[in-house]
Image (cartoon, rainbow, N blue to C red):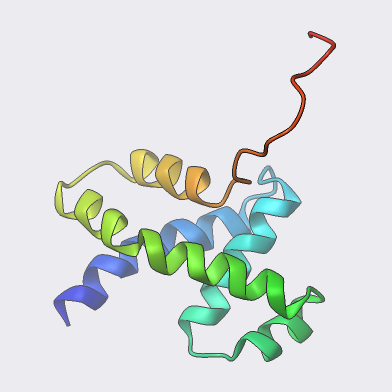
Length: 106
């Protein structure tokens, strides 16, 4: 029960990201993948419901599961919801990629 209460805070942050109009679509989609998966829906059904590939669902669920203990530690430290949201946003961002450095600057 205690574990469920802790993760409930992270779930609320995910729901807020999905509901916010200013959330980028890629971030909202990844949050939806996690939310639906947390309900026990299979990766295939999540993929079909959201119109993404099964591998996409597996990738984001795997990342979430790997980071879950770190998120739980943050919640136990009683961080603010904005700090928790920042960590979840960071988790749902693309990983750095290799390749040539940018040639143009902003």
